[in-house]
Image (cartoon, rainbow, N blue to C red):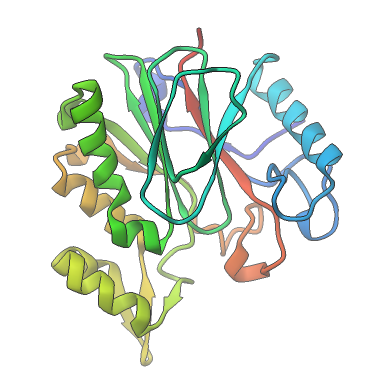
Length: 254
């Protein structure tokens, strides 16, 4: 089965964790979830979702691949994952794993999936950043968490922001724009565009600026993949409402 599998080329060139941002191509889901839906929480047939995960394992080439996911709640809680047998960590929007063989997964349909790689330490982390998580600063909170709990300096961190609804499509109201600009100032203002009396948010740009502000080197931050609302090879809640979720994942093989 051929997947839409986006990798970070800069990571691949110098040795990388197993990682990627998957689209909806492939899979056995039908109807609104057509393709490679990997969420059990959207109303798809659970047996089909399980089959879709099996297809991912075959396509990725890791037959014993187990991906830990979260119950994503648009907050800023970060969980530390030590048990490779756990399938879901509970309510959280960020995870860290320091043991090889643990693969962390995000399920998105517009929000920003952010993968963190620390190759010197074989550490991996993920963040799910919707506008609420971005307002709360979950990405820079992850940088602080990695420093305080694992002793990782910000300059050691590499981050990749995957397919997300773009500034071309993400219209927001004052209820979103105002709190973002109040809290994040110029960083938020640079990520919000005004067109024909409406405002649009570049959520990846704001998260990128937040990561820079937390000390991650600009050259270590990568934006990978398209606007998922424009590209129909990705699920988009804003575009379709009733739809599936695509998987982003990272981990160091054992």
